[in-house]
Image 1 (cartoon, one colour):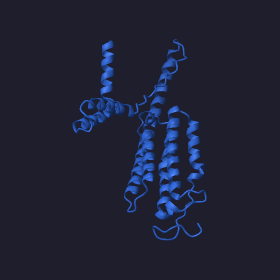
Image 2 (tube, one colour):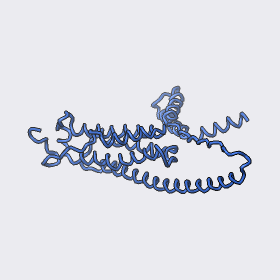
Image 3 (cartoon, helix red, strand yellow):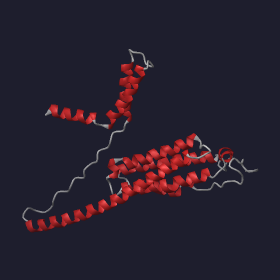
Image 4 (tube, one colour):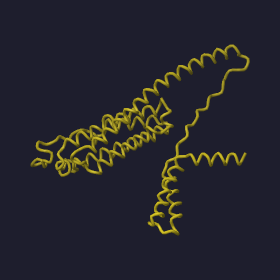
Length: 267
């Protein structure tokens, strides 16, 4: 039995995402040795180090934890009542399962729409004739990665009620409302104005947009962590933060002028 258990663990590791990531990184070490970038005596060590780094960089999947069922408080002599209760419980279970399936179908459609919005916003930045600053593009991609981490998590995707459901709605609002709002306001500004004009708080519109995107990423990470803890209160607090956060208020107005018009006099 001991050897069977060891064999199962080895097979599980070979098919894991961490092993795949490690093998991909290890191939880079082999390529470095083959091209002579790493000398012959050292490329095996470089390959092993890259394999370990790739495997450790891949996060382990969190297993879903089964909820224990409470013991039956009824006694063994109450057979008819137990049979009736069992039929009633089976009916309730079927109704709950059907409702969960409908909810999961709606949630799956919502997740697909969230992905579409993310892809559209990233494509929108990449397709502009006037390039957007690299740090803003990176901030949008970081936000997209945080959202996809929530959407792709098998443990959270399987929870159709409670904190995970509330977290999904908060993240959906973040992607559908706040992200386009930040980009709409920023991209409507002339480039020189966006990078040189100073707002009353001393920041440029470019800095303000970057801070807003960073805040949205932080909220998504916090909501994901709260959903995993099952902390409904923390999820609601983050959702309320999005609604009340002054940093997300849309107050930047584009000045008159061409696409590279400077800040108006006296601004």
